[in-house]
Image (cartoon, rainbow, N blue to C red; front, side, top):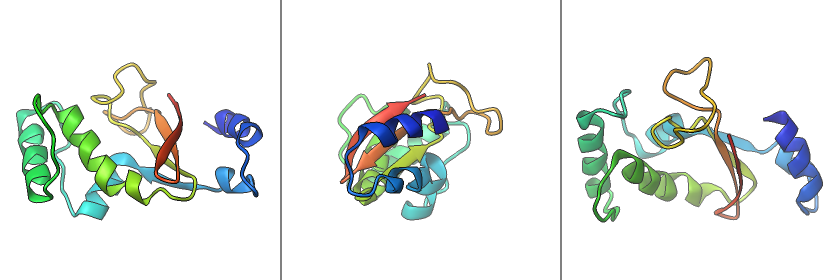
Length: 129
C-alpha cells in the first residue's frame, strides 16, 4: 500500500500533497459499525448477515433495488455512512472478501482483503488491492 501512496503522491495535484500520505484511513466494516451504530455479523456470507443488512437499509431508508445481495447492501450503506464523509483525501481500507473476492487476502484479519479505495470530495479517486 505504501508504494501506491508514493505513486498517488506523484500523480495527484493537491496544493499540499502530503495530505494524501497522511490522509485518514477508515476500516470499512469497523467504520460502518461505528458511524451507523451497527453490529454486522462476522460471517458476511451468511443469510443472517444479509437479513441484518436488509433491516439496516430499511431502518435508514437506504434504497437497494433487487437483487439485495450482501455485497450490494454493504455498498449502499458504505456509500451513505462512509463515502459521504470523505471530503479530504480518505482511504477506505480492508474491504471484505465478499466485496473484493479477487483482492489479496489480509493476513491479520480473516475474511478481509488488502483492497482499498481513495476518496476525495466524496468521489472515488483510486482503488488498489
